[in-house]
Length: 288
Image (cartoon, rainbow, N blue to C red):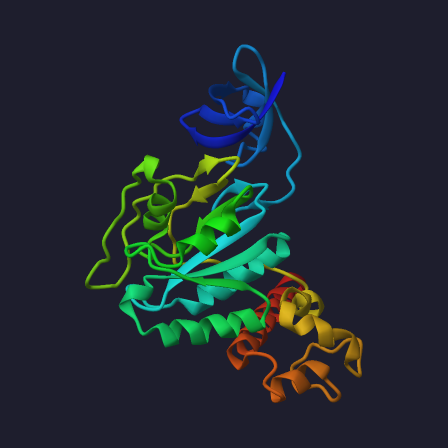
């Protein structure tokens, strides 16, 4: 049997890419319906072009449904549509929980003062996240992103209308993906991407374009463990006075010292506290 990665799945048929760079269309046996087959899954298929085995996943995302991702490229804009920062923070947390490298792209930089983008980028770089300022329309900043994608399996994710498909068109012009316009009334894009698919090749990197969305539940984690998934908080975690410290105003909290010294973004810390409250409420609901 041969081994390949699933690049697309529609109507019971799956497109695969093997290590030799060959594209193959296959079917799946019914026994795989329970666990499902995700784009990004490594599978073994027979000479009859039937998937016989789905190999264990390194990780998986539910929204979008995708497996074995090495990095997620979170694409947002400051205008057109406006920055949806809570969604960005939830997606960063999701990546941390799945051990996926988070990359942030601020797109449509041709529409705003570059200084605004640089200020937000600096805030996230303080947290340890690589951030790229680009304009797909004008071709600005794409070289750095190309290098980041090279040889990796990545996913583009973010709200509708931020230009995910436009970036892919700029990177992989042979695909000619459909792009959409924003609704003038609600400043949201329409879904031009209707399913998840991997584009590219092994050399340039494989990238999944995904349908845009605006809602994402806060990923669930034990309250005591939440701070571990905020990279900028980790260096202080073993220096708190109490091992049970949740970093919400306890005496001798080393994290609070970093906040006071402005070594941690105040906005990021506010999201930490908000997510912590969600986690505590969720846990109370489990045992009530």
